[in-house]
Image (cartoon, rainbow, N blue to C red):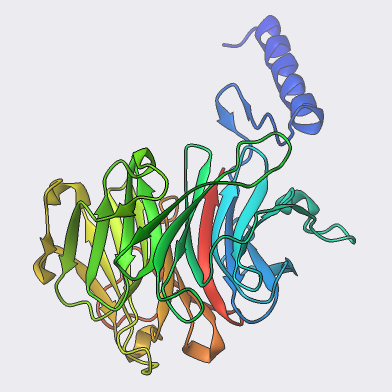
Length: 342
């Protein structure tokens, strides 16, 4: 039985919690007594045609609207969100630079819009994926017209307190590049126009100017042409996109490799029995160019470029074969995704 003193103590506790929830919770302090008071998820979207960046609040229900702000150029690609500063980095293909947007989530509804905090120098062309590790971002430059068909990694330091995006290294490589991601100290890179992923061990330890050769290749049997990749260490899941024939708007697919680390650090191939494939006309996958995994909801977010000129497709984590997406949200020119969970 609770005594009057117990009731009094409970009342004081509830009062303290109420006061804290009204006045003590802010962006810099979002927990109290181990309770998570800010479990928002945000998906950022690039477009290579529309000149806007998309922001999707994943806590606003199953069919939230995609909010947008004006981008620094009409053609954008790879993204990275710095949760500590609240800033978003984007590969700006219009000007061949990396752009830093300031306080994106706080300023999204500001009538003056989202400010550009910093711009890099122009040190690449035909930039695609963007990866982050140890206060540095890496741009994947795909060889093509205007850059002597040179595939290259370009590295920038983003740690400067003066909001500088400073070039620190550049590495040529022989493989065609698209999506990239750090897994520990290693950089995983899609080998465009192939069925493989390349691994560059201890990537940031290379000396600037080096020509980098992959430590190994992982061939994924059954893929025609991969573009996007996402690895989540907590769930040990690797997801790759397959655009198939770039001229065919109906032959795209996803490859989901669970227990990826079980392949081993020397694995050079993945057989079709080791992954789940999602593909077929019902999936609406034509040219899926990027992918993100949400471990909170076990869902897969896909940047589908061909369907309706750009569509965000959402699949349940256990989807397979010719399964219909659970959500379809139009986003013109959708080219890249970055998912952040607080």
